[in-house]
Length: 383
Image (tube, one colour):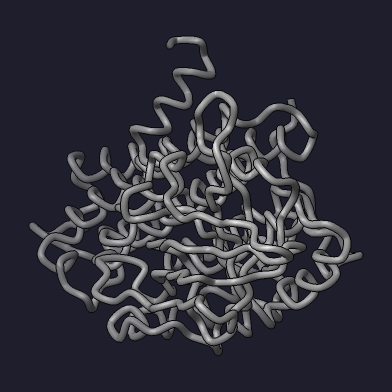
């Protein structure tokens, strides 16, 4: 078994790490404080090739493997969760559905600008009463002649209302199946379509430097050719999209855990109490040992899931395990790191305070930890 990364992977890691340290770290705290999405760093991330990483060059992508994409997301998350959220949602949820389920015309129309970072796309899944129960989607679409008429709303949608957001793929109920379940269909809604409105949400605990939106559809009419894939295929597309999205959320947890560990190790070696660095006290060194061990385990699990995907093998179970474990490992690591910082860990002048807030969404978004356990238990035939 070969656990080594290729030279290309290592070069990518170093270049993204250097970029995050030099370009994102100096502004991350201020953006968090102001709840501001940065178009400057967005443009810089695009210039580094962080959008459309797994998309073929034919459509303007980088043509890299999924491991590369996850490494890049991990390294951004090591410095700031908000920027990592922009990358993760922009790729897995925005570009992914268009790339995997769009027809040739849709791919050529939308993907080049999305892969260059000129535009962002959003994935309209979550609703006020349909979070974990995505099948309870109330947003509906009715075919009227040559147009779909959409009514409903979405909430907690990343990248949904930026100035460069080009549109959203909205999961909509288009009928009822023979078994009585809702027929769900994905429909492309471009920004500027009459009846479509996106509003930025404020007052967030976490990811305050990323864009989170509410979307509203009020007799919103789109051409019938805006279907993404066939009618009724939306639920399948959603599940497959979430499988890939879990890998990027796992990468955010892994990167965040690594960032928390780095801060904790550095601070504990500098902080002197009773005449010694606090890292030398066994109670603290054991915390650091636990963090380092769990991070290593998380990285092996997540990279295995990516390897399975890149080699076209079933990866859904390991992706759910990776998302669950990485997100909860970050939770334990940020908790240890704050404890090691003591009172300073509660102050905004120390980045660990932001990491402590940012980690919680990883246990909620892309399927809660409880839902991940349901998914895993089903895939191991426990239920």
